[in-house]
Amino acid sequence: MILSPEAAGVGFTITSANNVIHLSRMWNPAKEDQATDRVYRIGQQKDVNVYLPLACHRDFGKGGSFDEKLDELLAYKRVLSENVIYPTADSQMMV
Image 1 (cartoon, rainbow, N blue to C red):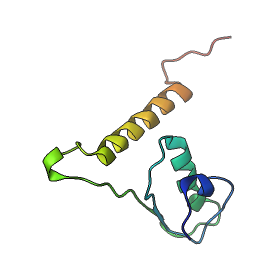
Image 2 (cartoon, rainbow, N blue to C red; image 1 turned 30 degrees about the horizontal axis):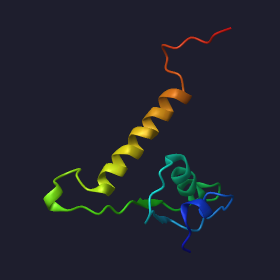
Image 3 (cartoon, rainbow, N blue to C red; image 1 turned 135 degrees about the vertical axis):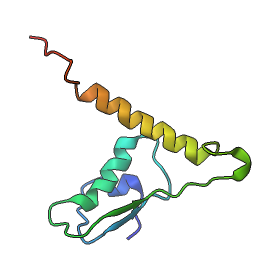
């Protein structure tokens, strides 16, 4: 089954799949994660493999292609959202 990340992120439960390939990356990492999470639902009994193909070119060096830069940006956005949404142990709740 081939689905775009937007279509796969809206209510499907695909527990018989065990390979996810993101051919086009979403600018919003939450949408990409939600599409991937569809195969991690209750009832999944297989190991799940997630593939993120990246186009690289030796003339641009490591981390120089658009796909590599987008991958770094999405990783940064994921870390940023985790730090904002989930408070650290040093945070105190305001009453």
